[in-house]
Amino acid sequence: MGTATIKKELIKILGEKKVLTDDLDLMYYSYDSSFLTRLEPSNPDAVVIPASTEDVQKTVRFAYENNINIIPRGAGTGETGGCIAVNGGIVLDLSAWDEIVEIDAENMQVIVRPGVIHANLNEQLAKFNLFFPPDPGSSKMCTIGGMVANNASGLRAVKYWSTEPYVLGLEVVMPNGDIIITGGMKARTIKNVSGLNLTKLMVGSEGTLGIITQIRLRCFPVPKARGIAMAVFDNLDDAPATVLDVYQNGVLPSGIEILDSSAIKAVNEFKPEINLPEAEAILLFEVDGNPPSVEYEGEIIRNVAVKRARSFEWSTDKKRMAELWEGRSITATAAARVRPDGSRIFAGEDISVPLSKVADTLRAIRNLGEKYGIRVVNYGHIGDGNVHTAPVINPENPDEVEKVLQLVHEIHLLAIEVGGTTTGEHGVGAVRRCYAEAEHGKAVEYMRKIKEACDPKGIMNPGKVF
Image (cartoon, rainbow, N blue to C red; front, side, top):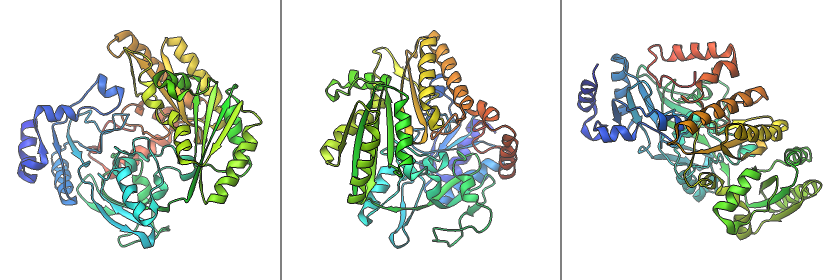
């Protein structure tokens, strides 16, 4: 079916207000935050902005009957090309569908539509002294649907894990237009081991198995207190060793962040008044809970950290905590500004490695940066081994583009070699699909079988994951 006919039929089915067909609109949907889509933008044939499950179902049935690809999209903040129509098709923009259907405070859960923004959800939950714990850096932009599709995590995953454990049930429009509800048709339980766990199958499937149209999430009580510690190290190996010692002393912080010397330099160049101490590494520990337990755990972290750290500071004062955290909060922005003619590219930015391999991995990435003559800023969520690498290049320089693609390829291979993964939280999308066999081996064959069982025509977000 030709593009003009697709547009005409969609307007007939849904009405003009829910269908975008102008070239300028389609160009907007040709990219996300990934470097891949900067190099290879790909316009969809049409964009649908649904306002109901029925709208999604009508669109999917039309696509199924006519063998047209369907690509779900949230806020477009992804960094892997996951929401792009790499092979053409219809993009379903779910970002405007931002209804909080119900806050069930008695059962500590909430039901939302996929376009709800993470920060907005927590703002509403706070009225009931609840929160949805996963904390992506893009909280003020990213949608809950996107978080579920990519099993997002973030700064506090070390204690609160990724999105997956909080998803209790889903409404999903399958590739043939069927609607299923996972986790129990009428369930409001937190525990459910009945039947095959289709909820968990959908979480992290990146839109390749179906379109998520409603999400039931578990919520936690808001912690009463919080504390921040900063430890400064002259030896890179001392940072992960200190994290391990903190764990072995029975403390599980809500977050543990690392800035290596490259990130420290980038932050100080970008905002000199922060004046981070020059060092091989800085660790930031966040602890939350009840006031006595926060102080107790802060003291344990102090006793452990001072054995190796050059300096240590602990605070529960809101103003000082914000100051201590500021260096980490602007690192991504600072990384993008380390070259006047450059920009940070998102291609190999979220590998995850064993804690014991963090220091070796950071050193190896530094060496790779020197090998290709590219400045790389390193930081990340060290508590779960999630290392963010930020190469900075002039994207208008073809030689630098070629070199950075080789660099991020080696970073991905490095992650697998040390017993890690090519993506700790941002997903596979189109960027990392070529590493599926290297990372998962024969398991990929069974992933494909599941995909074929759910999507026999292969229309659901093709060209992603594997």
